[in-house]
Image 1 (cartoon, chains in turn brown, cyan):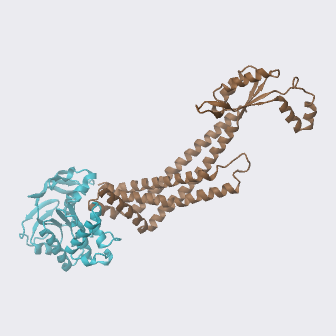
Image 2 (cartoon, chains in turn brown, yellow):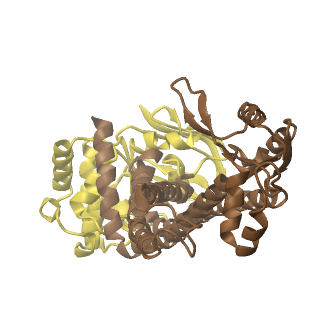
Image 3 (cartoon, each protein chain N blue to C red):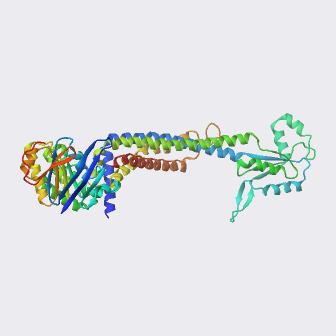
Length: 312
Length: 231
């Protein structure tokens, strides 16, 4: 009961002092607002870049060209061999969690020929002379992988299968792409963390100024026998309230701003290849993150600032 | 019965200045005691050590049997609840009313609202400010502000009341009114230690007087003994 009374008094006093020291509270809130907007923009950008890299990675395909004289039995045999490999992407799973269908597509050489003939008249005149038996075009398997980092190993394994002639997956370029995406992803995580840390210090310093102006209040609290935690609590709650207020505008910017951008560009940026993340639930998750950052950083800032005055 | 025992206490600040040299003093429960001396004689350092704002460099200070120098920083509040302190500049919260200022000392202890109200009104009555409970400090005179500070210092029933030049900013008439309040509090059983420069008050009150000079007790006058030695 006593703890509850102290707690409720602290919460009441925190609200009171936010409004009593309004100009300084406003300074802290503005500081939190601005930094959280920067955090929000960085989070939105980095998640979209990450999403885009995932889409690109998903589309990377290994193409296995089969020998020209491959028979239908051998084609089936190659399929059976491919699906036993580890890194092949699974399309369907059964209840036991084992894969029932893998992302391996057979493309018949005659279909490729037809496509080529349809694309230009010259190719049409050349290709029309060939039959299945003497066609220079090869049957292929298009294979998608689970982990793009292991694509090299998987391609090598496919190459070792009998009657597989050549394996292509954009060697060199894919590795580079994976490296670049990895750097971007890690870089954006680093930027977000760095921004949060900078925000924490910025907020801590602003709150420190607020608390400096209330040095007397803290001295009196100490004088009348308030324990350290009793002195700290109202300031910690105050930091929490400032953090909450400070995250309101960044949250609105995230929810309405991102939705507006998404709708304006119809969910894609420049080409249909670069897809934006759908606003729901993304904006709400980001908002939750922002309010949590605001509150935690506010509390941390206050607690750090008031600590200085508790040393005797 | 000894309430405060100061044994061979020395205080040297980090700057190298020694404010108190080998001080010994015993104060009994219920006493009213003046500490006088010229500026810089160590009066403030002495009382700061009593409520553990400063730690003695050597020696021992016992307050109610508690070794003040050994109390951990985070446990100091327990000592502060046994000691009331009043300053020359009142140290009131400017944005809180007289009532709120006094109630503040009880709220930090987590007392129920009703109990706080009863105690605050009782103590405001004792200092003669019952009808000014809702006034803010800047609407009160210096004497009245000091009464609020005294009320706040005694509201949780401390055993000791330390007053650091409580009449320093007040005219002689108001000063005597404050002394009447302090005397009334003393009669209720609270031990009072008052640091002052005001020799007239000391002479009129006829209490025990400790004269400090350069960090040492040079004279300890029993009640009524002090006449008019200059400080």
